[in-house]
Amino acid sequence: MTHFVKTLLTLAVCTMAVLTLKTAVFADEVSDYINEALKSYKDGKFTEAVDSLNFAEQLIQQKKSAGPEGFLPNPLKGWKAEAATNTAAGNAMMGGGISAERSYTKGDSSVKVQIVADSPLLQGVMMMMSNPMFASSDGGKVERIGGQKAVIKYNPADKNGDVKIVVANRFLVTVEGSGITDADLKEYAKAIDYTKLATLP
Image (cartoon, rainbow, N blue to C red; front, side, top):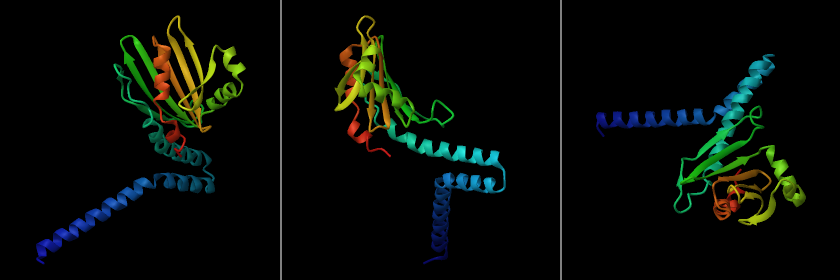
């Protein structure tokens, strides 16, 4: 083996080692912030400790937020869809939780599908589902969509409505439609794989 080849191999090994170390450092950012918070706490720097913990929480939420986005449905035939978006909100914002949503249009009709995880809003919807009288008092009704219990509101006069579904007591799926038929509203709700969604961590 020539000196030139040995040099190239050495450079390649060093490069791989640096890339591996760099990946490990980025992957461990959450631990770094938690350790930083612990040190600040022990030093009596409580504000800095809280800031570090908030950063760690945001990073964890960002990792989690990549999950629900993949379950947003494709557009129905004749519809167009915008790019899906996801958001990770800390406990101080919007009650916490993570969300993914996507908007769809066909002429003057529009639909928005949103999946929210670990949100305090779940409790209110679960209450309506456990007692249909709560849903009917607000103009809704309880049905099954995709094997899941759903609260559906639809106004045929203006063709507006929404569907709310709770999955595994963790995920709130909301389908909101404007200028839409009752059938299309339910079709978007049925297009989500609720069985797989329930398995997300």
